[in-house]
Image (cartoon, rainbow, N blue to C red; front, top):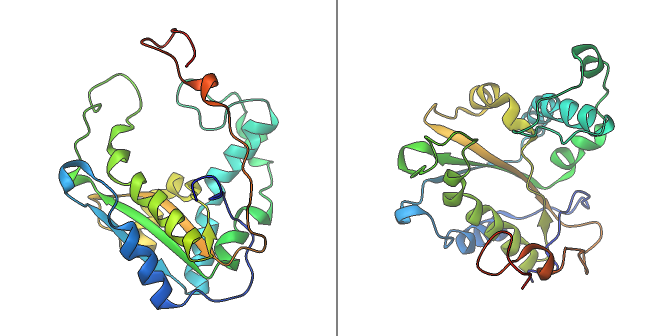
Length: 214
């Protein structure tokens, strides 16, 4: 299952019934979280107008992503500042395909995390924080695995987070919750059977970061 759960962005028009969605989430809820505090909140969106608005809020993130990629930069990279000019950024068009999954999926899940219950051990380090994600992304991955088990699929997207205040207003999300992911789910137009990933020896070393490959 882990080797065939890929990113699905193209869906059929088949619905994803509520009972199947509930079963997917019922299985996903057993993901671990810090202190077992289970601070996840999921908003299941079927309304097309709301998903359209969510897609429009994703344009900001997508525009910079596309512009930087075209100029050979790592998009939204926390270590390297953007070299694309404001004029170049404004002139970058965002293809419809970036919001298509939101509109063609059977349901879009907005996954939030309650910041009042996470232990962000890296909050005082001089780098971008990532540790709080440990209390939400295992759940997100479980959703994708559970969906795959039911014959459905989806993709973890984060473009909308660039406009998080507006997403909060759109969906009534309180200020003490962060938007961690948007997951369009539906029946895949084509089932993924094989994924390409780096071999273990390429990213695992013994004893130290600069140690021998496993």
